[in-house]
Length: 114
Length: 109
Image 1 (cartoon, each protein chain N blue to C red):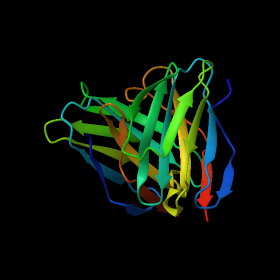
Image 2: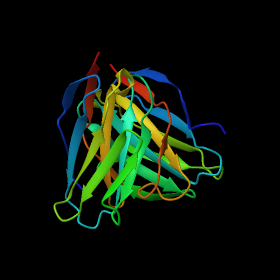
Image 3: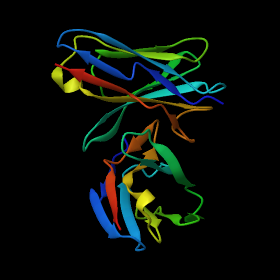
Image 4: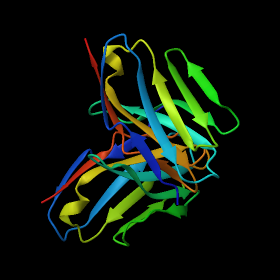
């Protein structure tokens, strides 16, 4: 069974640009959660999508948005990039809701904002 | 919302010794407490989890204990080996999983 796939692996953008990250969950998993990882800050929850609906959202500005398609694939968009958005963005999939069972993480997208 | 604090932030142990990482959480309604291990340059992976109806769980050299009254839980690694070197994250749930800031464990040969 294929694992969680994130593309692209690396991204370099400049301030003010926007970026779209993609996440393909494990087959059969309906939940996709997104996390931002920065050194010393752990994993900060961005949002969770379940069956194409945003189930929950973390404390990030509206510049961070996402969506989920009927095949459970998810995308995350960040508009008007800021230097502080530089981070590793991880998505994780689970069969049910992402707050109560094992999460399977992707390898992440490393975003650098210059 | 849930707030998870994790200590220590770094831990260096001699191979063969034990390692203990402690976490506290704030939401008394939390009922699921997983631990993830992230090796350098790799994705986080679940190593053990515990639910609120259990006080302790073991899996070979790894054990987790939970004290719901005090709202803290701990990860214990016995007989540490070089492959245990990684960053370990604890987490607790409310409407989402809230992660601690991580503990970098280094096992010295």
